[in-house]
Image: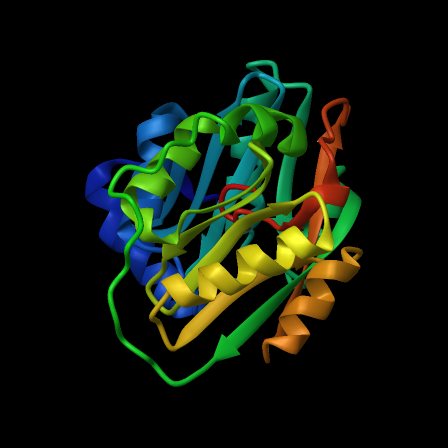
Length: 280
């Protein structure tokens, strides 16, 4: 029996939180709210017997590419085609825009489903986790970080304008915004989110290893959580070396995938870590 699929509403956020808790994910109510704020017509839930049994959320970046995230299915209803139905609904919605390229970050479990929908591998990502003794303390970062120099660079690195999302992330955790300048030029930047389980470092962007190291050092000083997550590009040797030096441990693999024409692939060589599998 096919599930009933409808638009997600703010009142559904507790149900989304329940599903992400079952999956052991790090998202917060703010992450769900970002999807509903920036693309309210592209977030959906699947219902069975009047209960939210699954979710999917989308966001569109500048008309260049779209992102699919929060693909979750209640463990009680897995294996009944709910994930496939939600994905079909989300892809059909995005194809009607039209959007030339759709992207997502796949888990090992989700990758075969996405392949059936025509998604192809772009590159690999590794979730790494740092567990440490909480040090406490306070932050001296500015209350409203200026992202004016960051956003044009991020558009080129990511491949599309995601300024609204980055501003929202920076406003929620200004103390986790780190900028690296040299001779008046912005050489890199890092943002962070306070997740339900850990602080999440990302995006972490650097033009060279020295800048990448400085950004990581400052981020770890700014964060006072015992657990830090970071999703590192597998081919970025700087990032892998640096997180290993700091004591991060491999947690799980992800695969960035795309469907359609990947004309705006950005500059992955400058990406130490992504914003996160929810938003890219």
